[in-house]
Amino acid sequence: MTITRISSGGEFEAKIGYCRAVVAGGFVHVAGTVGQGDTVQDQCRAALATIGAALEKAGASFADTVRVNYYLPDAKEFEPCWPILAETFGANPPAATMVECNLIDAKYRIEIELTALAPAK
Image (cartoon, rainbow, N blue to C red; front, side):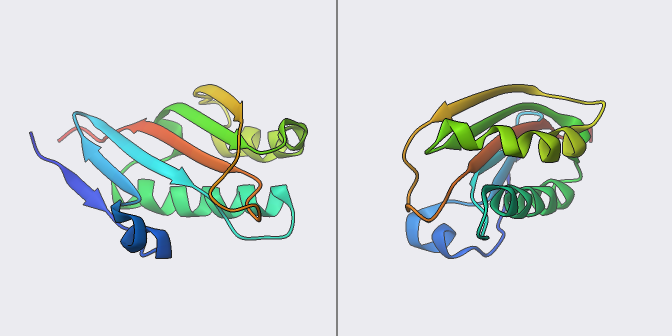
């Protein structure tokens, strides 16, 4: 089995020792991703942009997503993200879970991880 590792060059990748995504076993596994910004919506959009770039490098897209997990320190902030997520996934919504929990830094308000189908080779 071939494994392809995709880096986004983010500061935490080198510090912690992980990569943004791994393509293996027919899937693209994208690591938990946070984004910059003042609002949860800004951070959600930024995280999705980083994830979208990783998917593109893997030859996949949001339409290929089969599973997504959302992590937020405050569950009440999830609803403002719904329109962004609905627009991102459109007619191809994945199975999803939202978990309320602490994140690596209090400045982050949402973290998103997902799994997508890898392109057939």
